[in-house]
Image (cartoon, rainbow, N blue to C red; front, side):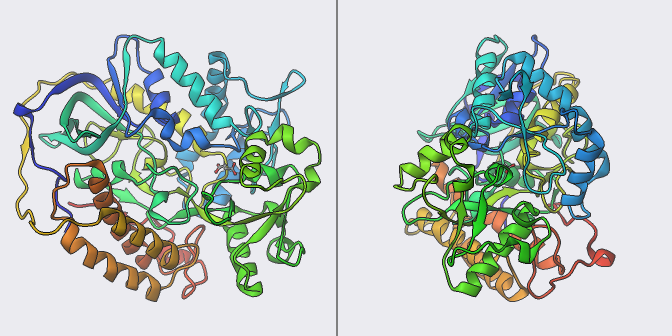
Length: 526
Ligand code: SIN
């Protein structure tokens, strides 16, 4: 049973900071929210590590927006809805696609140097897009370039303070309303940030999987904290696997951007044959879930542990367009200009999360959420590539505009107790993490079935019994507890959805079942 808080506390005895709005997370969603605040609004951005430890920093492909004269908002809207496999919220997608161009214009005004062809912005195509609409910067370093510029801007503003290395323990509630948050430093010290409103922008939980493109911090701490605070979660079963990540002993599952296929790279199997046309008319640029599952099938057929991405068709363009990827591959002795690269799918993005409305409001008063931490309705069962940076930009701004409208409140003493602390030998936190990540990759990954999901549920239940009642005074222990909590909820949602839709593929229910399941899964503690 998940406790209502991770650690006992009493604000009377804890150091306290104050802000009008507290933002948790320093990726594109959190930074965009901060920049939308009026200059008199005091903002604190608390980050688990440094701001650049977020997924944003590693985003390669780019950011999608209907800005090209060969494109339209309507087409971007249609592509997003189609990719979402029946579960997108039309109003949310309307907001995303119609406010997208203005959000990009704002970045251009801030001086973000998007790549250009001559004087015109350069657009590329990614899977399931019907037009070239993906903007990029420094070739394949889009997230890094945008985030760096946002951080530079923020450092010039007196009203925004970034606090690194603060682990979110719990959201503080006062009379059922979010009133700040409790944090644990890497040195083990608890502290409080009080705020009129709290915006969670702390990212998703794709690191629950052993095979993952995400940085180590992507463990869904914000989603778990929101759940403990009573917020409604949705669609946790939808985990997107990126088809092309480096597969090499000792190398991280380094992402090789879908834009590489957009520019002419192709997938080949271990015999050197192209195979995607067999599986989908869109071939190498079919929707992401289709490509990922086709790769799995091809690996099962040939008994190989990977397929290959052949980037040689890009010729000389390769080094100029994908310098980060080329450098990373070369550091592992692989030159993509000369040889196909071994790849396989890895968990990349979590479509589910805290349920929010068009202004980022959650079901808890005063608590907002933006970006990957949410289920905002824009991605449905399968996110369209490069819509996530856009989501952070658009909804970050909207959430802040709503959050600053809250009147300031008086701070009251807040405290929580925890009973049932277990004494006994230490738990090996790292061992549980590794075991959990392997379990999910094996049993609740690209393909799952009632049997594999149930086996995971039993194992997670067992681990929970002797871990969730312990009180860890260091972030890794709390992080592991959050991972177990989310894994349990993910597994429950995956078991409930007895159909295959978007990124959720059940081998025992391989078809879509609109009649029973064209709806969101929903979980809350209340
Ligand atoms: C990529 O560059 O392929 C990733 C883009 C995304 O996940 O949106």
